[in-house]
Amino acid sequence: MPDADLDPFGPEPWLRLGELTFRSRLLLGVEQYTDPAVVRDVLDASGADVFITTYDLERTRSSLLLSDLDREVDLARFAWIGTTSFAHSANDAVETSRRLRDSLGLDVIKLDVRDDSNMPDAAATVVAAKELLNDGFSLLPFILPDPATARVLEGMGCSALRLMASPVASYRGLVDEAALRSCIDAVGVPTVVEGGLGSTAHVSRAFEIGADAVLVNTMVARAPDPGRMARAVRHAALAGGFAAGQLDTPA
Image (cartoon, rainbow, N blue to C red; front, side, top):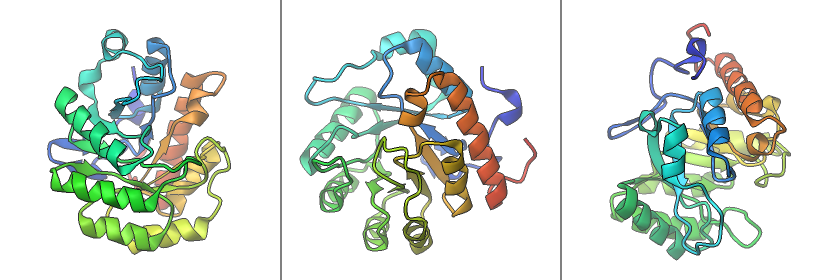
């Protein structure tokens, strides 16, 4: 079970979308796992309160069955959101989102549209966001730290913005802090820093420059002991949140 002395991350949600509340400032991707027991361990250790799932339109990627996960993890205790992390076009992102709504009733989407080099595609993201917002989805799009794109998506009605710190799975951390700060300061919606976070220091630093939350995936999934790394990242998020003044209750 999660560490009682670290739950919840904060007394108030940093994001509220309808009936869903996001209190933990650490989001954890689980697409890379093949063992339900490891998913259980990392979710418990991380203290994450959001479960992220997707639909593979191509049906070419191995993934865990939700029925298998449900035997290891109490999925009912999480706020569920969908992701379009496999999408490489606006059409794919829209179709994936609609499949997630039809099959699982999810209308909060972690919107990713990436180009052939696995970088966020701003133009395609805006196109997909427009259509999905018109369909009544709540969106958390993934973008490069570009204030102009951030303002456009905020103006369209996106609920939060996810800013790329460095290329996904690169472990390079926050390569351009000035750009990230500028983007965070340019908008009024919550911001999540993710992509390329490769150490606990990177996680803490994201909060210190103003992020509301972080999302990690590869650094935990590929660690020798994912559960241990998830717990370390959780402590780093708490440390960064206290340093930034976002958390004011003792751990």
